Image (cartoon, rainbow, N blue to C red; front, side, top):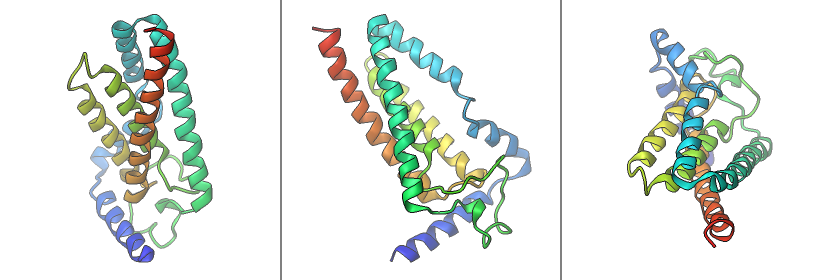
Length: 189
């Protein structure tokens, strides 16, 4: 059953990856570049500061640092534990796919880009939902676009992406709860 699931995953990867065209390659390379969204993160931090104040922001920056470290490290544990090669590392796929990323990497299950972007989206979206009702939907869409970029450039399978998004959503929610507890104890006493 697992083998069949992995075959479906490869087939879906090839379908989605081959939808790409050279005209869109640079766009998706910018989307997948890890520093592209620093202005978005800065804006979200500014909104947290504006709505919650400096003391709350400082506490949340620590929680965010813990959250990103957590998602990143757990992602690495899974990659080393499962040792599933990335599509760009599979000799049987290399001539059937479009590989446009700068490098391939060794293992891909699950996607760190997907888990980190989803964790940030859920965390910020939940903290700011009282003030910006639709922001969470925009952030979830942004996270999905970042996740798809990893398929487009040829470094992750769809199952890597879905697993990363799921783990990121759970992590974002858990660290949102941790942030709430800390704010209630340290700021809103």
